[in-house]
Image (cartoon, rainbow, N blue to C red; front, side, top):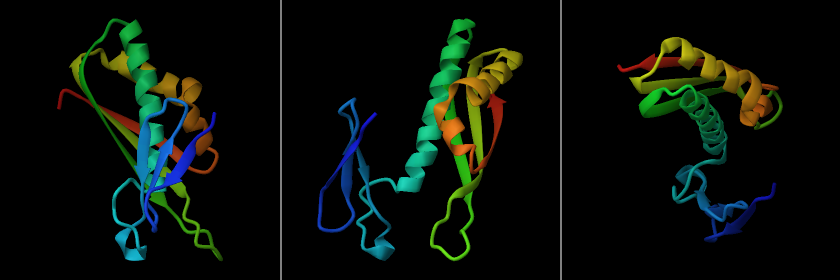
Length: 140
């Protein structure tokens, strides 16, 4: 896997592309000279985790013939600064799945568990340094 970032302006705005060729914009906070024209890199990590597990969960539920009318995922991360550095990695992450549809709760729990424990590579990557939990709601 390979991605490339191309600088768009004289500050911190970049466009990143992977093998799909789809562009994703990154930028820094206005406070440090960015223009707020893209997602922050740490936001992209959470987005990647959410997207990875969403794909897994949808695939599993579709194989079980569940009817998913809608799915929204909220990923919230808690960061802690490493003493003596400016680094603030995630230490706790919660992924919340909000489902709408005709879906069996036990099948939702199984799909999420399979994603988190067997399929999602982003979970495997981030779980080495962060506690990852999950929750879900159905038709709320």
